[in-house]
Amino acid sequence: MKTIFLSLAAIAALGTMIAAAPARAQSPDALLLSCTGEVTVRRTDGTTAPGAYGLPLGAGDEIRTGPGAQAEIHFKNGTWITVGSSSSLVVRTAGATAPGRAAPAAGETFASVQSFLTLKDAEGVSTLAALRSGGTMNDIRLEAPCRTAVRGGHPRFRWSAADPSTELRLKLYDEAGLRWQTDVTGTNAAEYPADEPPLEPGTIYSWTLETTDPLRIPPARTPAGFFDVLPEVEERSLADMLAAAETERAPSASARRIVRASAFFRHRLFDDAIAETRLAIEADPDNAALRTILARLYAETGRTEEALEEYNLLIERR
Image: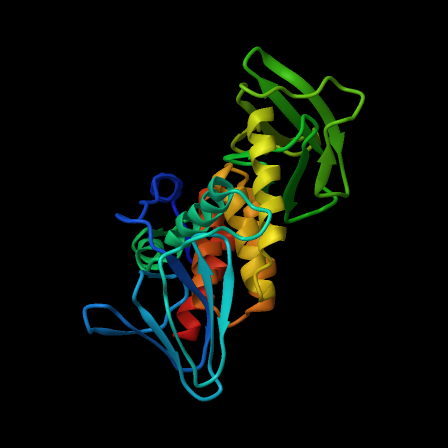
């Protein structure tokens, strides 16, 4: 399979686009998720649209399923309904919230899912295609944390290396300069030690890897990866959203993972959003929309090679 690459400028441009993903002009009353088989939506204006993953639904829209088909609907009030084979359902304006839930919490969770699903829009794939360029990848690539927030003051660093036995030095910087460093070999991960002072919210941190072998001339050094620590108030907000996701209990495993991924995305925890989206794909491997979302998340965090692997899979399946 032919390998293609995005330039650093292209990745930055795509990252900006993701960060500024547009919200819907008007918040829908529900979202259509996990469509299988023949699913159609009859709008209030009499038009008919094929069911699609993440399709916004308004009051009065009717969802119809064919023989053997199924659709999963997530409502603004936090409830879920599955429309089974050869059935129909008319969307009603969201009313009372789910038992034991407050309306604002349910609305926040729904809004995060709605925002997250904008990453599936077709322009994401076309943008990846348009931004292709030639080039070569470094022998050593940072994976995480890059262009993301992290939870807690003792992050875990991950990278990939063409030769795992390469002797490397990890350097962590804060605004004052070098904060901490360690030498590593034979591994692709390192923990910021628990006995070191925790990293603090409100500071932008960066980290690099460089070779330490004196016989390697010139030495290799990666571009810096940047991250910040999630403030305590956002930690509490995230905990509330994750608890809400458990309370709402989406019917399918894929939908449950997307609700969690959207909460992480809303709080700039892109690495966690990637992990949850990958699990969603495991539960729904033929879902092209999920793979588009994953490709764009990889691009946002600078993981070009993984972004293009997903992009190539999308192209092959067309």
